[in-house]
Image (cartoon, rainbow, N blue to C red; front, side):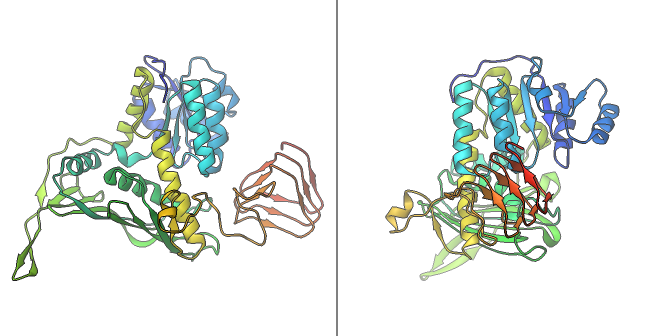
Length: 421
């Protein structure tokens, strides 16, 4: 990223104050940086005004972008809105922190990086666990050679809920694990293979298993589910010297354990030599606060974030390849470049499984319909229009150019919608 102009004591606005946004509001308020909260729900805004004295509220994003006393914008809205909102914020001269994923498509991620570079603004993505003190320690151990050569990594992120309808479990849970695994491996995977199960909705995966293979020989496995009897957040790194377990459900002193297990060879037979786990002293801190502090620090000092657009783009590539494999019922997908070596090559752009004949986001069709949306017969959709999750367009309806139809919208029958609605 090009040089960013430092801004001392920056003020921020949080856009979107729902399930996760309220946590961002709390942290930026405690850090003394929160100036404005933007949300479409007036009742929610009224409650925030009582809880956070002195913080202003508004309903429209333009009221945020026009404020000269706000240097940073924190975006915690549904994923399909990220590309548009981040673009508008950067072009308005604001530094941006956006929750994961940065965008839904690789081309959009690349464009956001370009806009951030051209406007000399910070673009930071909320890959929270990169700021967890325990993971930071684990990453340092791996980088220093304490674990030896890494053989394989696996990560489980399981719980009963939070069940979403705007995205599947892969996009909801796995970005954190992909981010950590790419960081530990220090390289991008050659290939991914993903399988899953849809139990609550025929088009939305509730559980997925993703396998990554890296050029160095490292293999990684990610298992995520929101239909699990208990909560598990565990990352295991197996090296040839030591094995590390990061279990975020444990008390702080037990979150990171090192197992100096060794394999000894006796008469050409491998024999495990087990050892007691080692505990490490790690200063306790809330990861989200650390992440928020980092955003403010980058604005104040003109520095590039740890989880910048480039880091997020690497994660987005793996997500898109995983989604493609999932849509193709577990077919291995080779990432660009490595596909030539293996004799196969596949795009790493999100191509969702079709509902009827709906075009995918990167198809040559002039419009996009999300896989969970329903389009009846005798419907006309014009170019550059997007129809998102669980919407239903009834027979006889016409939708004009450049429209963005949000979630759970019913249109028709026999309705005409003009341009840019």
